[in-house]
Image (tube, rainbow, N blue to C red):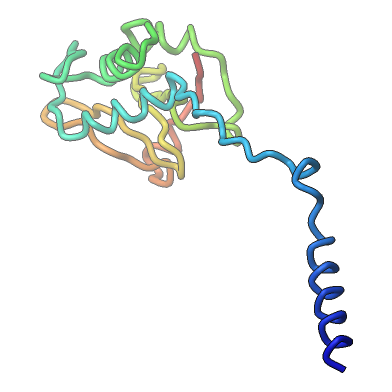
Length: 157
């Protein structure tokens, strides 16, 4: 009886072991390749670090930003040279369908009859921008009617 029990256990263990291929046939675990952080992603991080910095017309440094200056600075810190003005940024970006927007894309708004304001999209309908005189770099939402009605382009360099 004891021999039969020992034989059953041995066969049972062998069966469990047969569920796994021999070591030579098992896939080798490869660590995931290091994620390459694209300039868009780095620009998002830089722009978020500027939240709270003062608005300054013509500004493109942490001492003060206007909207296009924030874009230029954030992308510049990420290693991507971009034009200085909203008009140039608008004309040099390719249009992205709204449903395909991604963090780092530029959002262009028509405020004064023409595209005159830009922000950096963060995801989840949020963006960061330098709004206007007397304010600071801040977060805003596309769920806000003011911004959603004025959005004219999602752009990408």
